[in-house]
Image 1: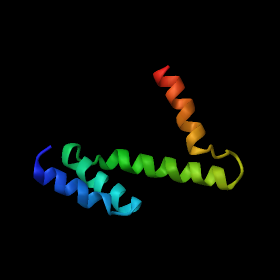
Image 2: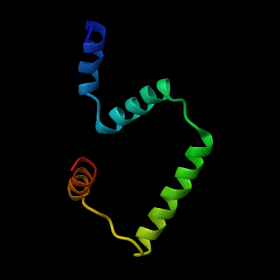
Image 3: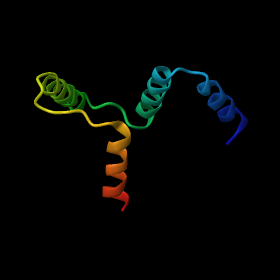
Amino acid sequence: MNTRVEAMVEQAKVLSVEERVALLDALGELFSPPDAQWQEAWARESEDRLAAYEAGKIEAEDFDVAMARLRKEFLG
């Protein structure tokens, strides 16, 4: 890593989680510009999932439990 990148990483370390997520999103868009159609579809899907959760139709899963399940499923 060059010194400019190292300096940016150090600056990123002091950001809040929300700021880091925003930074990652912005950097990701540099390599893969957003697809408006996909974003609209995902927005609808996430709204539907939230509504189903709030209506008691689906349950939330603990992050650590979900990650362990996914690691086992995809990584063996």
